[in-house]
Amino acid sequence: MTELEYNLDKDKRFLKKWSKVRIKGRRYFILIDGGLKGGIQVSVLYTFGMMAIKNLLAWNFFMSAIFWEYLIMSLILFSINTAFYHRRLWKTSENKYQQMIAYYSDEIKNESVQNN
Image 1 (cartoon, one colour):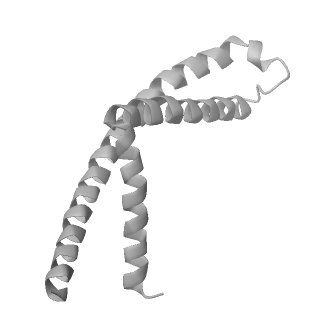
Image 2: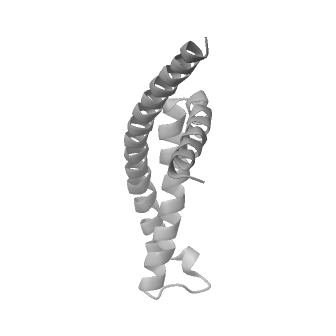
């Protein structure tokens, strides 16, 4: 597979994937995929990591106040942070999508003109 074929295949995969994301909408992508799904995953990992570092992982660590403090604080902070990250990701991916659509639509037009 040549580099050109690889890039074309990569572009097609991106276009297919991003068109599915666009159907759900910008708000869903930023708030649900970013804020909730991403924020919850990162905050749970962070909380368990902090508990492990502080050697507080015991059978009853769910009952400790410090666990809930870390979890609530990290849920708030990481949800906001991942929402902002997904906002930026939406902008860059949407720009890339629009450029690729314009490029490939010109390619298709040029090929049809040359074939006629």
